[in-house]
Amino acid sequence: MPWLQKLFFIFMVKPILLIVLGINLHHPDRLPKDGPAVLIANHNSHMDTPLLMNLFPLSKLPNVRPIAAADYFFKTRWLAWFATNIMNIIPIARRGDKKQGDPLEPLSDALDRGEVLIFFPEGTRGEPEQMTELKSGLAHLIKRHPHVPVHPIFTHGLGKAMPKGDPLIVPFTANIHIGEPLFWQGDREQFMAAASDRFRTLKEEGNYGEWE
Amino acid sequence: MAFLSDVMETILDMNVWANPLVQVLLGIFVLLIIASIVNHLLKRSRPDKNFSEIGNRIRSWWFMAIVFSIATLIHENISLVFFAFLTYLALKEYFSMIPTRRADRRVLFFAYLSIPIQFLWIYMEWYGMFIIFIPIYMFLFLPIVMVLIGQTKGFLKSIGAIHWGIMLMVFGLSHLAYFLALPEAMNPLAGGAGFIIYLVILTQLNDVSQFLFGKMLGKRKIVPAVSPNKTWAGFLGGVGSTVLLALLLAPLLTPFTWVAAIGSGVLISVFGFIGDVNVSALKRDIGVKDSGKALPGHGGILDRIDSLTYTAPLFFHFTNFFY
Image (tube, rainbow over all chains, first blue to last red; front, side):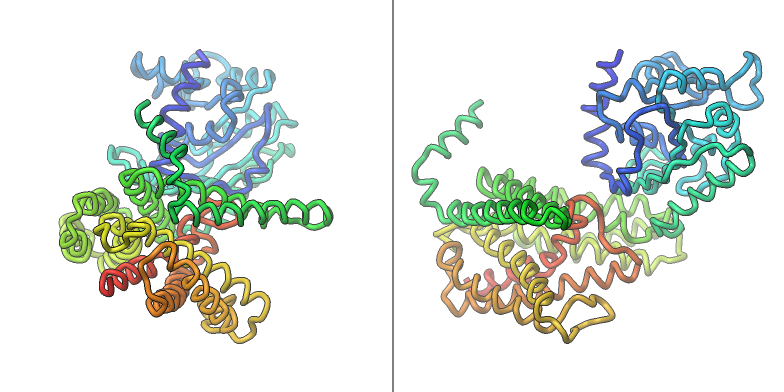
């Protein structure tokens, strides 16, 4: 139902981003125009995914697919409907849940179809405005698609505005730093180190200081 | 629909064009059209040079002029909502820029609430409450919230930063809107909106001419540690051109005698400078260049209205005292 998704973005996401939050976009020219591509970002808030999707024009939205934990988003029927129809997620089983074969296969298929994946390699939202170590599931996926660019995106501010477990929204401007694309270079550890390194550079570029 | 036909009627009404506010705003649009044409010709004749910075600036000026005209001309309540929103954007930019404590989320939430309340006093034309609400009630209330949260580490720094922000952004900028609540008799020619447009045009022109004079003639720096681009030549050039424009616009927009016009020109120029370097010092302290990216070529909202945080309250009390 792409039109429902469009309505949701026009009447919910865009007004909230415009009025309540506000965005400073750094290096917009580095954003891929089209898929296949993978965006990896730090995860602080439920607003992260709509914010990243909103970087693309409305016409491209059906082509942008956030990767989300199946156990979390399929908990209730309403949430499952929302995640599938509005957010257009690709559900994935978290590590340790190996009932059905290869968990990365739907992601591989999506990249083959030329879609843009949104991936949070930290795995969970965690403490607001603090990055944790990246999980290596990403490397396993990119190994199979060495020609797909991976764009690290560092966001700051959303964790302050809507942190995990606090229902009160406090207006803060979000900063989005888009990084240069990374490619698979043959080694898992090397790739993960390069990705972490890219995140560190983007974070330093913002110079935001710690949230005491 | 009734609203739309009201607007159409206003536009078709011949008296509208005799309104000095409309004439001054039209003058601004004429200047912007000339600037756009010159920029376009420059781009054509020198394709090797990059004019995107100037082009961005002009486009942002267009945007600001259009929004500002709509906000001040159509209806007083629309102006109030516009100024409240502008205040909110400035405060949001400030709170997003400064380091804040995790514990202060609720304090910031209440700080934002001061905006609708402050503008409610303006709507009610309750001057006494308008003038004491922030420096008495908000300043005494926010520490209570903070004490109840109970995080004492960084208490002083935090309450200082929050209070200063509300003082500059909410209290300072809301004075722009209170011009609308002043009695019509104070400015029979152009009303409260006349004072606002006078103040905003002079403040913005002062910024631009200080920049231009500084670029052309500036050598001796005034406050090199805070703002290395500010020079005595820029400052004096700004004072000169602001006073000149203040004299030219005064008969159209204000009831001022020429003495009062010179006085307000000097006041706006000097305190516009101080408001500007004030925010520069803040940005330098926390290590950022622009307060945001809201206006291409101009940085954030705060970069554009930093001078107004000083000129608005001071010019307001100047007019209120003498007229």
